Length: 266
Image (cartoon, rainbow, N blue to C red):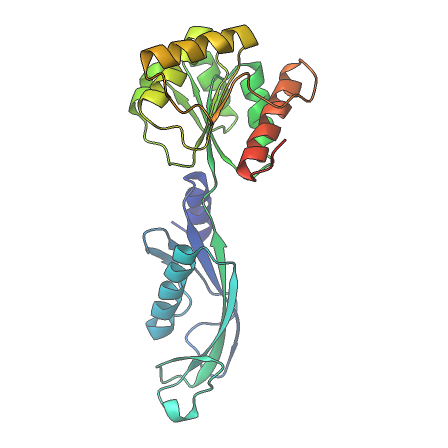
């Protein structure tokens, strides 16, 4: 697999990785300007910046970058065996090349994950809006025709019964959940299952009228725990910005998710 195909694959899988590029070299160096290497979340490499000790150093620096979450980095290296001529302002790598090389480390972070249950009009509009923001969106729907339609569009989607999926998947702790299915019972089953499994850590939004929302909350308290923490529950879903079309509702949901992500009280 070529390096660019690997980058596309890692982005699709929502994985952390670092792209290391040789931006400049002087003297004798194993890698020249334009050499490129990808270091994935497991430390596996694709491509090269020249091999040898400088490549090992680049791999370790990439791992440090992913572990710390720091910003992109440009770093200069002196490739020498004689430490007596080392530059204190430049990282020395023990190699006999006696050249200099500059590596640019570009950290591609994995994105917050949003699970959207329901691929109807609101779900479709929400996917379109979130596609312009930095989220990794996964759509779950139990209708074969919608699954095939969305798959053809390149949308990351899963064909499954809602409750069955909610009972089995293992999301990251900072995942967002949106229930906008075509039936209130589906929405409640999703809501109840996620709370029963203690998966709601960041945000869950459910489309419902105020009366239906109140009924669902009463059911949750009676069926799970009267003292259940519902501070992350947004039901009815979305900010009150006006409008009742699918796209307007989706916009209000996206705005609410953004406010939670960036801890803005609206």
